Length: 177
Image (cartoon, rainbow, N blue to C red):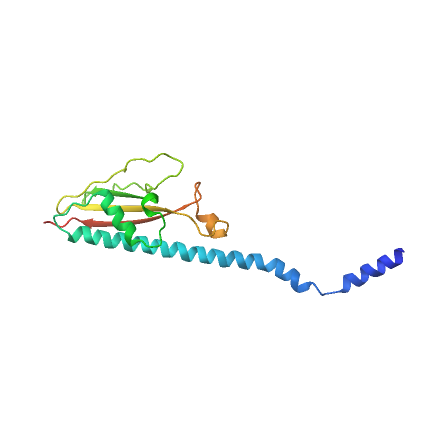
């Protein structure tokens, strides 16, 4: 009986039928990790480019529309309408517009003011419309849900709420009317 068992184990030891399956089982998760991370990075880049473009177009309208004094909600709605790939933009984006002295150091806070799902809604941190020829800093921060939150890139980008923040900052001078 023991001899039969040893001979069966020897035969099994010398077979190579399952080698491709073992290689596939080892390599496939690593390749899928790279593919999903690449897709996540591509989508993050696309959404960031859309946010940057929407902010730039909106600031261009503010600069050239002399005499108009757009308010926070108007600017936010305009940015969200132009940022096509950002879902639920109105609820997940905050704007900051800060007057800046061109001859002094920048007084813009280093950390952007973004939405926080764990806190109650806060009023706008700083939003001041500029006067003629006044330097203004506009910063938009949007929180985005990752498409593949379990991929390596998704895990690296998310914060405590399971989202990642995209920011777009621009500086402009309010044109005289």
